[in-house]
Length: 162
Image 1 (cartoon, helix red, strand yellow):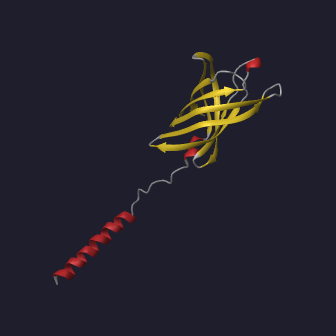
Image 2: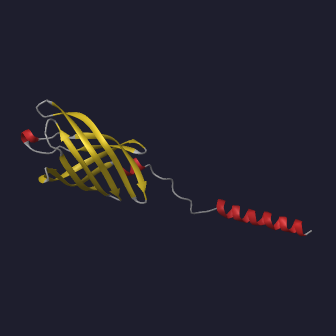
Image 3: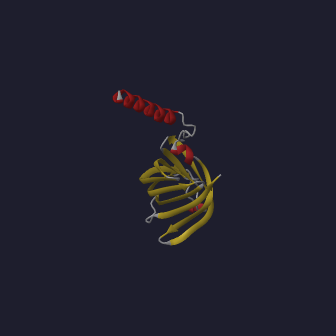
């Protein structure tokens, strides 16, 4: 008799626990893909350093497009003046990860070619790309080796999502 009573109480306890778990009204919202949280345009300050000296300090707009749920492409805006103008260039397939409220992306290297205003094709290599997004605040850093320039240019962009 005690065994039957014990089993009945255990079944009742399990039913109550499972009933409370399955009827929760505070279900989490589905997680939005990390790339979807990053995509868009960001305006802010871009500082370019060449050989540890500030070469440019301008307001710029960076663009991010979604490639997959965890990957984005970044379009870096044109910089410089006259013959020293570097056309806008893409950095493709930056992998993203999320930790808490911060989204980060790192890419060791990306190489491509751009066409200058005079129609010349120039090769470029971007290295040590770091993207950090916290809410609407974005920080991007990378080094650019453009054309036949003997030294790299170090970029630091801080912007806000538009």
